[in-house]
Amino acid sequence: MKTMDMFEVQPDRSGPKNIAVLLFFGALVVLWMGYADLQAHRVGLSVDQIETLIATPNAQEGEPTSVEDYRTFEQDARSSNAFMFRSVSLLTSGGLLLVGAVLLRRLRRSGAYMCTAGAAIGLLGGLGSSLQIRGSARAHLGEALVFTYEVWVYICGAMMGLCLAMAALPLLNLRARMALEPVRLVNDHESE
Image (cartoon, rainbow, N blue to C red; front, top):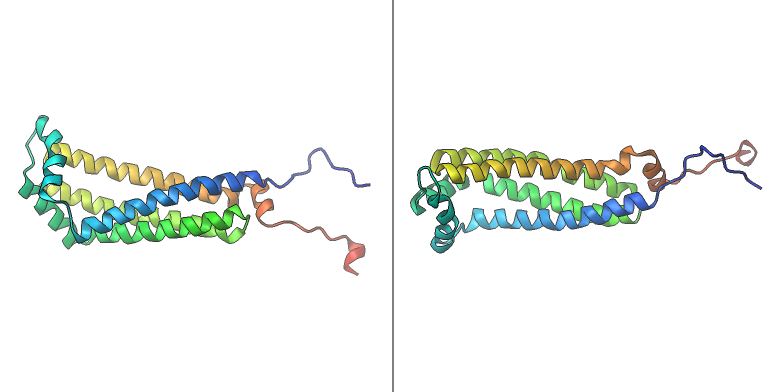
């Protein structure tokens, strides 16, 4: 009969599965944001949508933003391909996160690598293009809307950084790593 040592490390199968569920729902949000940026690059907002968007910031202090200013901002962001770059990086990131989360739920090591790669792509691409969009906003929009686009840079960086940390956790934690790659102990007598 085999005795268990009190300090023997056991695989944790529930931790990676719980992280996979969170990453799955996070992937859906990332895909939705990527699709929204793709639409912003292709079509942009209608005049009614722009008027609704700028109504509240224009009611505050500071210089107001007109519909023409917002159109100029959109054109500048489109010409630098900031919306397209963020869209491609978020859609790629979301796809990798979605497939990786399914594989991670099945305790496959490749799922953890795919999630980590997807989160890193989303972090770098999303943050870089958000900085470009913020630059366009500073050049063409009023103070209140510039603040909105600055906040989006921080939100994108913080959320994708958190996603990267969660995706890398099964690769860094010993018990989770053991669950992803079951360890098979071989006795010296069995190997002969």
